[in-house]
Length: 224
Image (cartoon, rainbow, N blue to C red; front, top):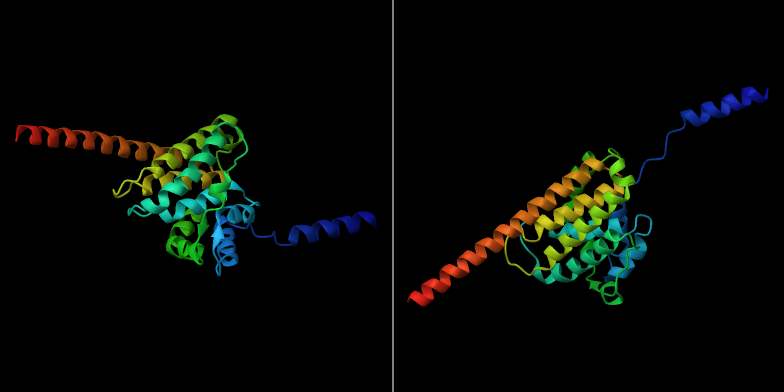
């Protein structure tokens, strides 16, 4: 009699549908709705994302900068936030932010506008993301590498360059690496590393081109 009851219980459990996994885009939408009517500080966002922590915050920070058009006024403070978080991850320390950065205030409705503008990107990412190549997240070396690349991408964002893609390429690096950590997707981690190489090559070429242009202008002025 007991065995039959146990079998019935097991069958009932097997037949019951599994609870759907909450995607990070849904978490972001819930977060945006929570702060839709009033200004919100970075510290409040961080407190509200405690279920997923700093990686979800990094995804949220990266979203406004994905377009080719740079946003120097916003990229400097948020680049600092990304750099500090990434540096502490690279050192194996618990992420932390100074009070000045935590008190940085965003206008009402800012999060909703960001999500509305980047909703298609999030949908594409969520179709692509799934747990795979798990050793890339289980080993400390790769987690620290991701932190270092995120920190350097934050420093790229800090550069106040009015040049197309100067915000977009490092923001894509941060987005891919953070989304990879959230969903334990090793392939997305590799894509984030590749995007970092593209961003670094872009800034190196920009620096070389700027130096050559400066030399040309200097020679032209001195020759005149």
